[in-house]
Length: 599
Image (tube, rainbow, N blue to C red):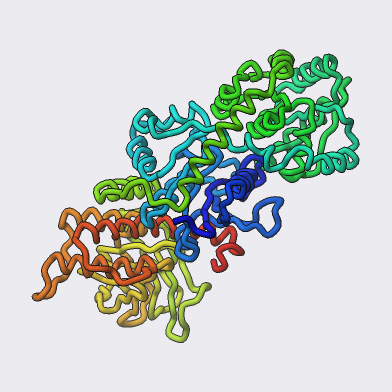
């Protein structure tokens, strides 16, 4: 039964100054309203913060998706648009985003949360910029299985997903092709006149934009001069993607060509997306590297020429859908011919893309609030979670830890510490030497994620410290293995007597890898836990798994009696989802404390 109000999580890069990405939520909200849907969008991006150019619009970090679901109970999760379906670390903004992070979180975390809570997962025509390797294909197929509606923005994106799911994946144009309905040209006339007065350019102008350094300003100047001589329009240098360094690249280029016989102007001030739309919708032509510069121009019937110097698949794909491949310029020498072709074209192709995008929106919005397409099988869920787990932890081996120490007359303090490094699963051996006797030490293997410590041996001034002197403030100990199930894992060792040297030998794994290790050993019955005479092995395993889940997640209700495999699957859910949460939270809290609240 339809609800009076839907709450929808939308995923994308809405936290950086990039023209097209900032339009996606506005376009989706407009389509919902146009179809009579009362809906609230909750936005998620890699880092979060305030949405650029929209004061008061909050964007949450993607790692908060599950927490916010528990508070808001989303009716759907929408992925896109943008080039989101990828497994590399190709962030547009290396200053804003952690360059060591991967783009996979933006579509794999939503898939996990969707499966865990039975939320419809809908792809809003994102891009798939690169093919996946054979090793990545199983994970991609499982992620596609988790989606209830699949659409990508061009044929290349569908091809890059592989053949296995091609029949389920619709090719639907980028939704920005419908932006003229959200901002009709006549409603931007006043804003355009104010921009004309502000910057002093003529009514007859072309917008020019690049987002990369131009190797030959001479070639650029020659091409622009030929275009201007033929068509007579002023050329306005207007940065579009500030996150892509448009302004810096264009300022350098403008300085190099401004002394030539050209009628050009450079817009130094940052414009909001709506101001850019006012400019593009009133221009004679758009010439640039920006996909969404071309898409917005085409939506308003303004000819567009793509400077596809980098041979980007998304630009080729969009112009193929427009039937305008003759309007692509691989270098400046191609610009005059591409310009001629663009100015001769009709607006009928853009109107057809707008119709297709409207049909896509009908299908996507029709899935909001509906039951998931199918229940995930237990075996399929287990495979998916372990594949995601493997991808998220792949290659991460070194960790940093801190050993705090307390002297007889003091407690642990930030000043009384020694730092150390260790590697996942490998033997750790370190002797700590102090300038005065200590009575206790606190071993913090890492911050922001739980971990497991095993094969622990401690010597104080050469004498073994009994296990009874080792305390786990938050966690549990089972047969010599310490489960530190907290975001600030700690082991406190009280000395039998004060000591000047402490030698620590151990194996350690972060929560990600340790949970995988524990999970695998549990499945193979290799990890033997203490059992009471009255408890069977199955009952004991259920009790231990319930105890582990209670430390990892905030459960909303008591765990019901279920079959052993169902309990194992739930343990996998918690292990994967929450290990991802804590792995990402630490750098996010450090960088954007105002969003996370507490470091």
